[in-house]
Length: 226
Image: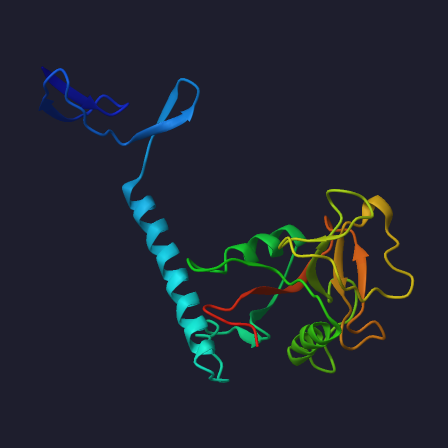
């Protein structure tokens, strides 16, 4: 029995003579009831290699710690990123919408990790982020609306319930005294400009019309928390 394999386009991929009881694998998998899709061997190999790579990083990290060494065991951050407490941070000076900032951060991580708009979980981290913001400004930098920075806090899904875009717990806040106060119209959060009394404080704003600079955050490649 001769079996022909064709793509959906009709192009023949090959033929094979088979006995009635013979079995061979196709590059298809069940996608939904009665439906099949082609599987990418490259994607599967890539995914497996990525998993092995992450596992080797963790093993080397744990081995380093178990040896009794107190030295750091991480590989570090990519160029233009700054390391703090096991995470990498990067300031972006272009003023964009919240949606653009959120998307741009998610494209920054590369193949080994994922970045998001910055999430902040302690007073020390808030000071680090605000000082990074301050280091990119000067005394004549404009301070009006749009000259704050976006952070990853939002209540778009449920009014009044603020969550971080990276899925981490909202376990720390640094709201300005009368914030949040925007109701359903203000669904994104900014950090105040260094040249204002609101420096390092947070307040909610209308995300559709505001354009701000932003900071992205991602886990350090191979880092062990100190």
